[in-house]
Image 1 (cartoon, helix red, strand yellow):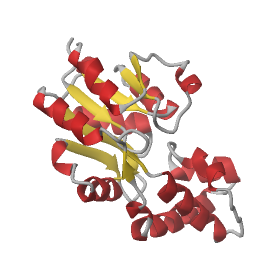
Image 2 (tube, one colour; image 1 turned 90 degrees about the horizontal axis):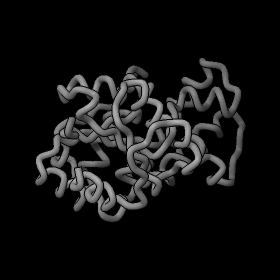
Image 3 (tube, helix red, strand yellow; image 1 turned 135 degrees about the vertical axis):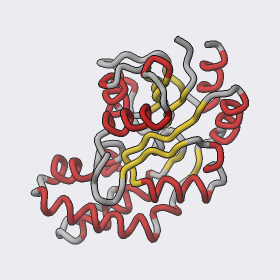
Image 4 (tube, one colour; image 1 turned 45 degrees about the vertical axis):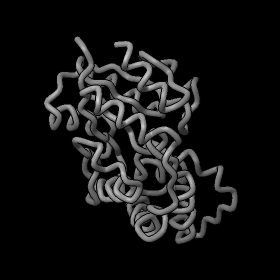
Length: 216
């Protein structure tokens, strides 16, 4: 079947918000007397749900991990949401896909409020048909669940949708839903992390997304 709906992860695919995320995590960790000066060491927090990450990477209890997420969101709401840059070529890529007739949606584990704010501030929110993302209550954070909800809201069978992501969590979520996946290698992941998962295409620039789909 032909692809008619494109699902985009947000972080590492549409925009680079490494600064906002790592500084937000740094801010949150200070409340637990964990002081990190090397922001690059916090890149591992980009991708997976934060609640899971604080438990896995810091050994926090679930209760403390929830508090850390609250501190992180306090920073991100006030500062991090503005420490973001669109990847070069993203607006042009989205416009080309819309002109080609594709349905376009975001499928992100980031809170919907933050996603919408970033897309709005960078002038590309109107290019999306749907924004499917987590809420502040901690629901819809697992990537497989986000993708399943995106397929439901866009009324798209898995075989007719393509998930584009930059981390293994995106690839695993797509596989769990039985849909094709394309890796955005210009994001935060490494090429090797996609090896265990089916991948129809590996892209080094947003323009490669357009080139791949126009060949379909």
